[in-house]
Amino acid sequence: MQLSREEARQPCDDCRRAYLDGVKGHLDKARSAADEVFGWRRPWSGSIAREGVWSNLRGADVLLLRLVPDAEAVGRASEVMALVERHLDKGDPRRVRLAHRLRHIVSGELTPGDRELLARALDSAYSNLDGELARVRSLRNMLWTATVLVLVGVAGLALYGWLDPRSLSLCFAPKASAGDPNQMHVVCPSAEYHDRTANTVPSDLARPQDILTVEIAGLVGAALTVIASLRRIRGTSAPYMLPLASAALKFPTGALSAFLGVLLIRGAFVPGLSDLDSRAQVLAWAAVFGAAQHLVTRLVDDRAQLTLSEVGGPTGAVGDRQKAAVMEEDESGPAGTGGAPAAVRRAGAGSPGGPDEHPDGGPAEATTVTRPGGEADR
Image (cartoon, rainbow, N blue to C red; front, side):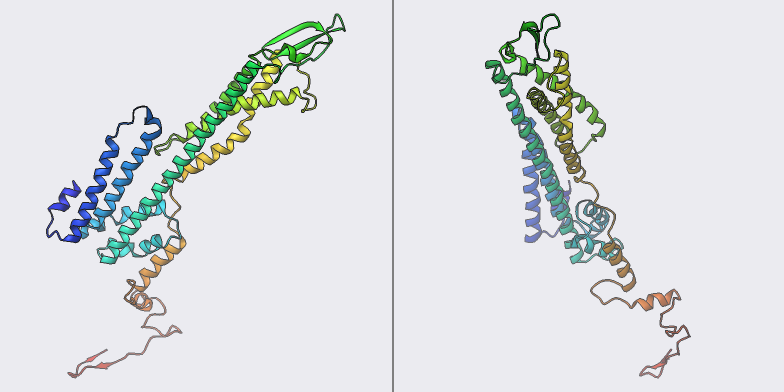
């Protein structure tokens, strides 16, 4: 609608036509991205297309800001300033300069330089927003890639344990049989063996599903941490399911940490935990180690929440430099004109330092200026 309105305005010179063609190009690209059909690729490509739609719409908006009438540009000045405050740093020169000129733009003193400043500042704010969304997408992709790689490793361990259970045995021989000291108990993650001969090697009794059983117990422990972490997850308007990617990483990591934890106990690496007495203890420790993955993955959760908070989050109130610039502008007049002396403004309010007073606070002497016509101004 805005494009059609601007096309109808006259005159339409070559420069204006170039801007209108640019707006059309952005809208065509946005429409193409919105209409694209991804099929099975939608979970990976759909959000990127949505980002492409919005990026092209923002580009068209910047070009339209150069074409709209002065009254509309003045009306959008506060909107542009709000976007600049959200996406540009407080020390950014464009943000400082726009804050310096905002009062005069809103009051209707719009110059060609002010319009260019509005367009450049809006373009920079949109570019930073695109960069923020790109960082979210990059982190999302890294999390899903890490999840797939860890899942492949966990599946590989389970398959290796199934094909050769003795090589990665998780069986324990905690004590001899109470009835016969020449016999012993063997505890494995998926079974318990009683009254075995004293020379029995525990790894000979390992079963193919032992590692898989430990990994499942680790998954259960990781699931509890995922549920507990939901209280810290906040919704987001970003077109990427970053919290979901962060939560999904916990499951294979929990399975892997459960296997490593039980393997360390099996190797007597942890003092006092070298002999587990029952299958239930093995599974319990596997669940504990599965939940312990939260000590590592919580760093990923914090990174994900920090990245999401950077998208569209305010970079703070107007900075001190901006406030100083606005105050200076208010006192000294429009930039570039030298401005009325601050003493004149203070004089109007009867403040010290005005032309009606001496520096010591006494009244100023009257000054008479004689014009060529004989009239005198005091």
